[in-house]
Image (cartoon, rainbow, N blue to C red; front, side, top):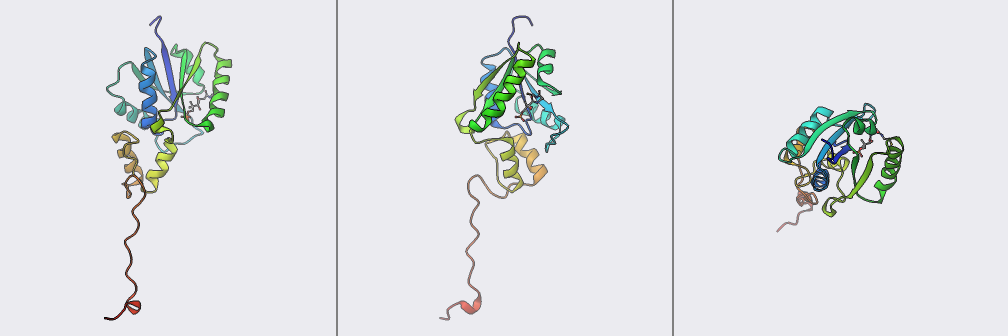
Length: 186
Ligand code: PNS
């Protein structure tokens, strides 16, 4: 609709985390419509395929208003033009994100000057969170409870197996009794 502020929040979302959802919620306070869009990149294989990622995003964001969930192939700016979106939302975590994000924002601006990239600092409680870290923790038996929506946790555990360790450090193994020969006789 004319006069509406439409933004695209693009990403791999493999899978969506509470860090992403924090950015979604804060963006919704600034724009009229937000299109959360999963980039489909045939050269970058994730653990979830695009329909699975979309299904998890739907489940995680189901009560939000003003949201559309989509996917795109190819250039983000082509997708923005097609959807008449002039704002690109990206979350920024640490300094390490900056170089890639800066390069991408500049290139997108060059290709599609109408669109403005808006960076949002990730909420401090999610500063260390990334989809890659989440996948690694689950893969090696750690719990990601409280870091991803329950539906994502379920899907990850289906894929990698149930968590063997709770949040925090894994419990140390039970103390071993010395072998019988070394035991003192009373
Ligand atoms: O969640 P990610 O992996 O950091 O998201 C990166 C993404 C998908 C937003 C970015 O790689 C992208 O826009 N890809 C689509 C291709 C494109 O437009 N590249 C921009 C060249 S500067």
